[in-house]
Length: 249
Image (cartoon, rainbow, N blue to C red):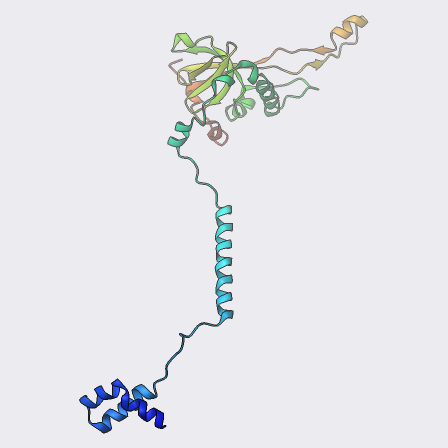
C-alpha cells in the first residue's frame, strides 16, 4: 500500500486533478479512474472453433458457386456474331458435289420411309395422301432441278440441296459450284427412285428369269412451287398448308 501511495503522490494525473478539484474529490477520481481501472493486455479474440466454422462455410460457398458456374449454359451467339464468324458458310474446299452424294442417298431412303415405300410391294403414292407429307419433309440432300423461273438464267440448274433457308435453296451442282436459288416465282422438280421389285413371271427361259428377277420401276417425279414453300425446314414440320391458286405461274 505504501508503494501505491508513493506512486500515486508522484503520478502526474493526480497532480493535474489536484489543480482542478479539491483534494478529496481529486483523490476519489484518481482512485476510481486511474488506480482501479482495468487494463486489457490484448484485445478479445474470437473462439478458434468459430473461426474454423467460418472458414468451412466460406469454402463450401465457393465450391457451390463453382458448381453453379459449371452447370450454367454458355450464352448463345447472336445473329450478328454468327454472321461475323461465318457459322453457316460452307468452306470453299467442301463445295464439291461428290461429298454430298452420300447425303442424297440417305435422303432417298428417308423419303421412302416418309412415303411408306417398301421393297417387297409396289408403291401407291397419290397427291392427296403424299402432299401433306412432302411439304413437311426435310429437303437437305434432295437433288432439285429448276424447271420454271422468272429468271431465265436459272432454268435448268440442277444440284443437291446443302442449305434450305426461308427464302432460298443453296445447291451444289455437278460442276462443284455453290448456287443460291430464290424460292419465290420458281418451280423445282425432284425425283425419288423406287426400289427394285421382284418379278412374279413364271413363264420363260432361265436367262429371261435371271434378267427379270429384279424389275426397276420408273422414278417418282414431283414439282415444288417455291412461292408456297417460303418457310424454314423446322417451321414446316408443324405448319398446315392449304392449296392455293398461283396465277403468276
